[in-house]
Amino acid sequence: MIIDENSFHDSQILNVTENSSEQIIDFLLSFPTDWENSVFENKILRFENVVLYHVEQIPFAGLPTILNIVNLGVVKKDFGSGKNEWKVSCNKIRIETNAGNRIIEFSDCSLINSK
Image 1 (spheres, rainbow, N blue to C red):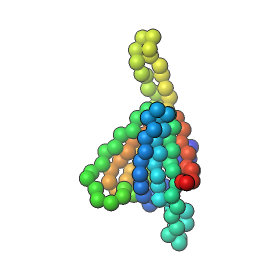
Image 2: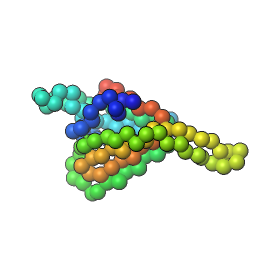
Image 3: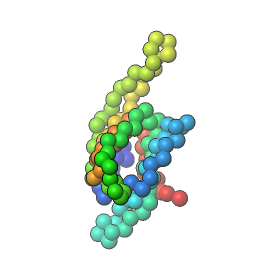
Image 4: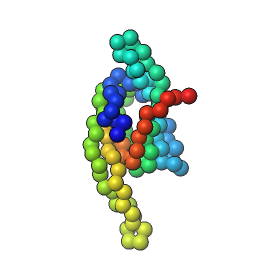
C-alpha cells in the first residue's frame, strides 16, 4: 500500500475533496519531495471506495500538517440486513496531524501528481 511505501511526515493538507458518487476522497497535499532542500510539490493522495471518513480535529489556525499515518490493518464491514446485506473488507488508516486525527476506511489508495 502506498501509505507503507512513503513518508508523509511534514505534508500539509491543502484541501480535501469528496466525490460521493464514486466514493473517492482526494487530499491535496504539499508533499516534501526533497527534505534537505525544503522542496515541496502538490500531490493528490487519493482514496477509493471509501466507506468511512471521520475527522477529530481541534479548532486550528493554518493548514494541518501530517505527523504520521498509521496502518490499522484490514477491517470487515456488514451493511444492510437480510437480502439487502453485503460485506466489505477494507483498509483502515489513521492520519495523525498537528490539529487532530482523521480515520479513513477504503479499498485502495494512490499518490498522484496534481495538475
